[in-house]
Length: 344
Ligand code: 13P
Image (cartoon, rainbow, N blue to C red; front, side, top):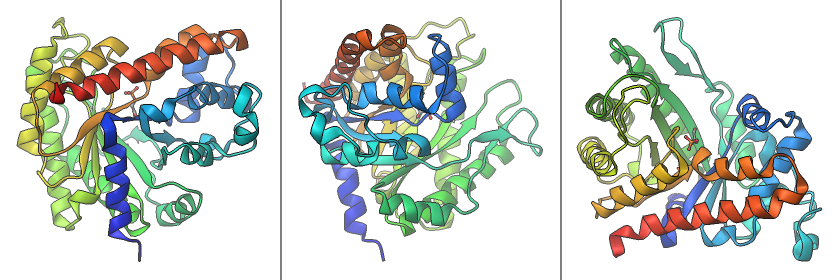
């Protein structure tokens, strides 16, 4: 029987010292898009190299408490040819074992992606529950102590439908049950997409409702909420709304939404960046933290807002790696400082 104490200790560690999570869990097609944007072909080797830039940046353990991997990266090894002084301790370790060795908790994305739903036209449903219990047992044995499942919620004049919100919420609850039984902390990520003409008000309404539907589904099967982490979008205006990103409004809307919809005994909350610029993602995190304290610990779990600037600098050239790592460390440092706003 997996221990409740171990899961609670994992959550405590994830939120310690204002640290956050790197979402390095892009699927192979998404990682391909990122690499193609800088003219680098997507192969297992280039994806390994891309991940290695971030994971071997010196001192990441001062800012990161967790890394979310995709299956391929979880199993790939540090190749060590750029690891200089510490080369011998890097070489040959899987990425997951490597981050664990420097005190960072390895996590794994386990959903099978969001696919067009035949039942709900224009909406997506996340798949991947088949065989999940066995996959989680294997990931636990390989070092994973938390997992992630993302569902995608679209806003337009007629969406989201209640039925699609419920179907995704039920899948999140079922996934969480499998995780908890395997000793793994579930991160649940119902992402309300930024794409669209909707204003911030609509974003708040939909995000609040999405989270309410999620936690209703969790209540139905009586899951221990203090063993679970929510990864949520911030309340932001649609990217075609014409509204500007106003940190004060975003923070107020996000704080109101979370206080309305999230049970107080949840283990913690992390934010995705969702297409915000790296600077916006940091400023908005800071503004949200300033409105605290909250009943839960809060932090970041960004992919694009942490990796984007480094990707643009790297361009696939080894000579650019130190500069790419420097920019990555700077983003990490700023986001950890943003997390500390409450204590200021
Ligand atoms: P972004 O921060 O790029 O939105 O990615 C976070 C994530 O994990 C998406 O599933």
